[in-house]
Structure formats: C-alpha cells, structure tokens
Length: 378
Image (cartoon, rainbow, N blue to C red; front, side, top):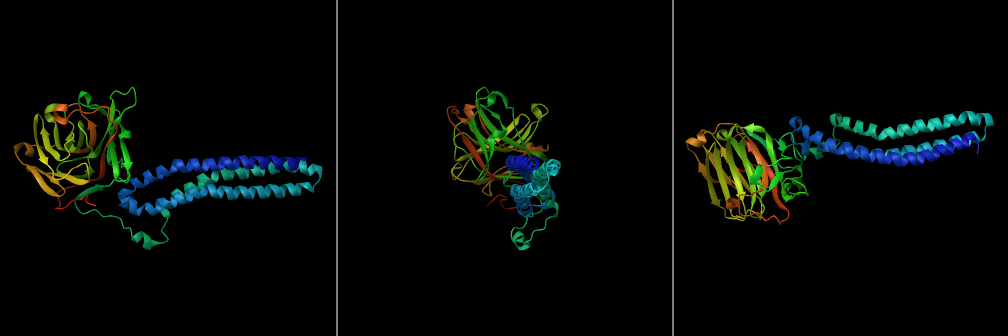
C-alpha cells in the first residue's frame, strides 16, 4: 500500500472512531447545558414575566438547535469521507514521490476537518444560546395564544412549582430540629410531581443521624404583614406534621414570632391555627367538612397590624385579634414543611416501620392583603 493510500486508510479509521466520539460529546454537551438553560430561563423571569409562557419558545429553540448538533456532525463526517476517497483516487495516478509528499497533507487535512467537527456541537449550542437574546418567533399568533400572566397589583407571587425557583426558596438540607423530630431535613425530600411539588418523609439511609428524612423550604424574602396561601393535599399518619407558616428566627427564645397552619397526626378532618410571640402561644383546632388527605384544598392566613385571619377554601374560618397579635411586628420568612415528630402527646405515635409519606403542593401565593378571592384556585 503506497503512502497516500495508507494515509487515507488511517484517516478513514480515525473518522470512524471520531464519529462515535463526536456523537458522545454532542450528547454530553446537550445533557450538561439543557438544565442550565432551564435555570437561566427561570432567572429571566424578572424581565420576561411568566417564564413558562414567554421564554418557553426561546428555550425550545435552543434545545432543538442543540439536538441538531449531533445530526450535523454526521453530515460533516460523511463529507470528510468523500474528500478522503477523492484524495486517495487522485494520489493513485501520481508519481511515488508525489504520493509520499502528499500523504502527510492528506492526513493533516482530515485531522483539521475532524477537529472542526468535534467543535461544531459546542459552537452550534453556543450560537443557540445566543439566539435566546435575538430570536423572534416566526409564528407570533401561536405565542400570543399563551400570553404572560400579569400579576394583579399587590400580588407578589403565585408559585405553581413547574420548577423550584431557588431565587425565591431556600431548601433546608443537612440539619435537623433536634430531639423533637424523628426526621432531619434533606434536599432529596423535595421532588417534582405531576401536581407541582411533593415533600416527602421517608427512611434515611443507614448511618444517618435520624432514621427518617423530611423536607422543608423557606422564602429568601421576609414579610411584615400580608396574605399567605397554599393549595395542598396532606398525608395521613400519626406523628406527621405538615406546616405552612411564617417565622422570625429568634435572638433567644423570648423574641420568637410565628404564625401557623398545621395538620397534625392522623386527624384528617382537623386543622390547627395558631401563633407564637416569645413565650406566649395561642392556638385553635378547627374541624373541617372534608377529609384533607383526599383532595387539594386552599389554606391561607392574613396578617395585619390588627390581628390574624385564617381561611379555608376562601372562607374566613378563624380570627385572633388582641394585644399580643398587635405586638407581632417582626418581619418573617414563609415556610412549608413535612416532618415526623417525636411529641406523641401532640401528634400521635409515629410508626417508624412505615414507608413513604408525601405532602402534595400545587401552589403557594403571597400578596400584600387578602383580595376577597383565592390566588391558588385552579
């Protein structure tokens, strides 16, 4: 085999190996960049309104172009093979000296072309990312059919958990509330679900400090007064505590301030409302006309300088307005959690042989005041 033919043969073998590497690299780049594009889309919400309606077409375009990178690489490789075959045929009709002289250039050209192909997926994806800023939909009527949701005045957010917005929520992870719980807090306990978000209590792996893991998230923002609403379906089981509440981290016990909505233990038809101000606590159990474990319902409270009002399915259910509630003035974070309690006198005895329990959450909303209607209703 002369030098040119040998070089072409070697280059052809390299091309076959490169093809596999190119496809693997393209898929790896796509797997790496796709979730980051999604998170970037969430970050755009401050100027793009509802990400799912306004930036959706842009992100879809990025992913379509990214996936086409692998296909384009295959086309480019086919062209390289054609050039190799042409070069080999041309070399066959030349002198021996020309063959030896041309062989290194033929192999070098193939290597350069192959390198360009290896880079093409990344370049295509980078260009696709740039198109997020420049792309104008070719079918504006389709986009117009899904307009961005404009929040009413005074409504700060309506979160339906199509993705967990970590610019809004901080997830508790790697710690616990001490002796009083069978569970610690784990990021893995918050999982996406068809309904929005699932917060799970489940057994921990061997060697963990607590036998069970639970889930908690808290807002980055602090609120002084306002209306707070959740739409959820609670789990059934003694020892479980599902909480939706605001809380001010105390500088010592006397400064604690907290407003609660809680489902405790296996009381499927009972909800607990309450507040804590330093060492003073006040609460009320309210019977519900439904089983809270069977379907989604909305639960809310409004905190004003005059007092606290609690709502169930948009109906005023309980009110506390006294000197203590008027003293509650410290800005508080908003929390949502599910845990397994050891305080059996309050929650019932948690069955540690049980498996998974889940709190399903479809919506959390916050506004400056109650507007006379639910924010989370479907």
